[in-house]
Length: 602
Image (cartoon, rainbow, N blue to C red):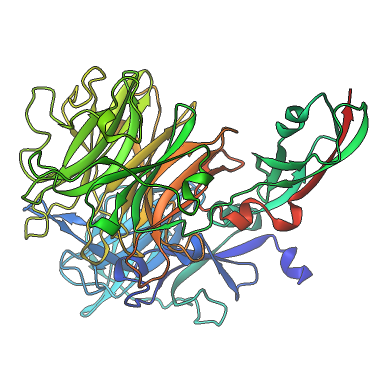
């Protein structure tokens, strides 16, 4: 083993996976996966054996999405340093693609990637692919039914020269070793530095609590002086986070000066999935000294909105807690169906809930309702009549189709709305659900302040797998230097649901889609945390320590279609990147949760 650990190089493998109905659909199996080997035989998958690069779809003349997959991923060095990744594009099911293209990405580190324009390769489907550096550029060679061909790209990105016949040179492909990741269909592999392999294992892997730090001693005059002391947890990448401590102060007499030893236990994440059943789109609301829970009520066929009230987030899930009706079914008012995705936001200093609702004819549309001054969150009479969202000129948000899942972003002194729009739902002209953004009128938050612009469309195969074509459920949090906007793709009540991420500079004009960057890889998926399938339609909130938490719904198995609520802490790694997959047992290691401190009472 020592000779393996002392190696200065490692191997990175590109592969796809075997399609397994009900477990690994085509759009997820036929994606570029990566794995690391220290000995060239046993490989450790990155990203929990979930794909990292996904085939982009075509947009048809009818403005619909033609889903694609890929096969035969191939890693090759770049002339300027770094690596390229190429793959043969296919139909979603893996059958040959009539457009016959090769997909190409560039990367410096296998952590972030740039997607380049695809390479057209003529009139025949390719079955195998090699890429090599030549004196005058990059040689792309492939096999087809009629023979072997190649073309040269002087640069990447660049324009290909003529396609010509060539001689196929067999390469030693990665063998079907017992040490390959589960269900792997190997492409090729290349050598990388062992130090890069270490970074990739941390970047795409799971972090864990590995040490706990406390001050050696403290001077205290009362219990509050101790209760406010948090532990510092260190994680396997060197990052840290404060952890609340539950202190046992039964040994301390604050009326008697002296020295004491006080023991405590790290509170950690007490939320165990599933927290609730039949509660989609959960939102935790800190408001006016209380915490509230909003959700889509699947148990009542998504009819009526209810809210829970408690003194802490954990108490929102206590047995027997009451659900308070805040928006009832009402035929006369057109409040009949699709009571979807309620979200609480402060706009212009006033409290509002944004949501979607339909009348007798199915077709959810975005609405907002205002909490009356001095009103109670859990009293339906305290909420004013809902207003439908409109554009700045008073016209409907959309002339046709459905609108839903509106959220609010505050950044750079401005307020924006993001929502999901879909036209032609479930017919041959279905556009898929897309994210739109616009400035929001703070004085009249049922009105936009700028024209809607397309922010994101579900073109990647993880977003549009098995006929579900979704970009929905946006929600954001803002740090000093970044706006993070999460959204969900895949099926909202299935294991394929996953969370994607868009980022932007908070000082930029967020209503301009050009100022946003869309990650190619989802940040949360059904392989992220054991026992949680299809996590998505999430929201964020902060606790009293300032820790950021993510609330989401998911399933308890591949087969389940009952949406259940879950919560966990969002951890910021050593590079400041948010991690959404820190399970409770890795957030606080049970073996490291007991702490003590020397207390001097004066």
